[in-house]
Image (cartoon, rainbow, N blue to C red; front, side):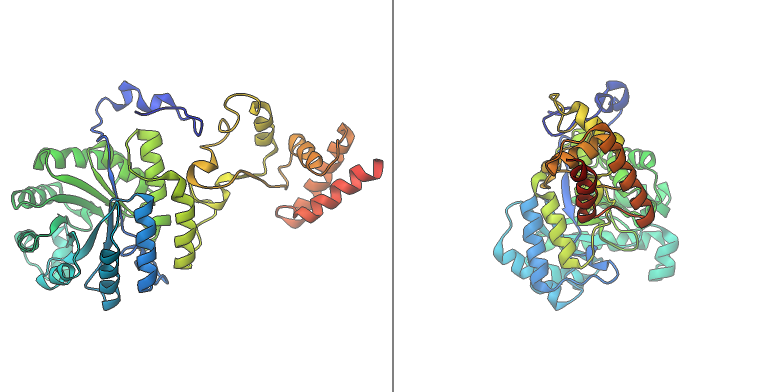
Length: 411
């Protein structure tokens, strides 16, 4: 049951007004499908060793993702990782391999004991001709159909749909999806490789997909973030009826990356009321671990897991916190959600040019002083002047010195 307010967050009730969601096709639950070990490794400069892939897989399984993907055909290291993951066993996630529409790729995946294959190939005719030399769209679709049938003959679950779907025509998408549904594919996905699609367009496309293939086939998403719309597009897809969403931890991936799993999980559950199976309390530790292994730090102002999500130096914000602190909503009324919800510790108050009277009184009290109004004004002026000179925050040792000089001198 969706709640607008708990002891960890408070979100708008109008997100779920009937006038807003009346035409939505929301599933009760979606599966988060993790591309970190395949697409994430396509991030320039990121390489995961075999043992690191196994560790990441175990971490993501513990987080609660429902699918994990590696590309078996890439290297023996990838195949070794797949075999070791299968040997250890996962409690939540099924293991997939990406595969081109080639028997050799599917064979390599099957030899590693995977649950299924995610089949890939072009969605639009122009790309199919120029990249793969395919002269007709019929051949594009036939390649998918043959791959589905071959994978099924090996007992593999099949997911598929073309890449660069954003530049396919609606007629091409309809033909491809209907034909694959008739061939018995288990899951279809729309792969917007360059992130072109608008979220409202995505919702429309997924409604059409459901019309084309019926109620029994899972519909999956795969969005890139080149236009900053990956998470929004995934939400649009879920509004249209998608039941599986692809993502990577920390938004790793080609160019601007993919939809970020932490954002997908929190946004879907808090803002759309759709369950994901993700253990929120493990999001931040998982993000930190994968950032360290990838040697790819999380952008400080990234939503959800970025370093600055729970940092503030605004005097106005701190004054708000002080005023609501004694209310029942004190912990979360001035936050998107409490940091502990995602496994973080507390809020960090930063001292800089934005410092206000409330924050000055607090930092004085924390240091054993009870300042009068003149001292508060003097400390504020000193801090603002020094922040302007430094063009950054004031380090703790300087805050200590300023407070001691102003308060200590008069006591």
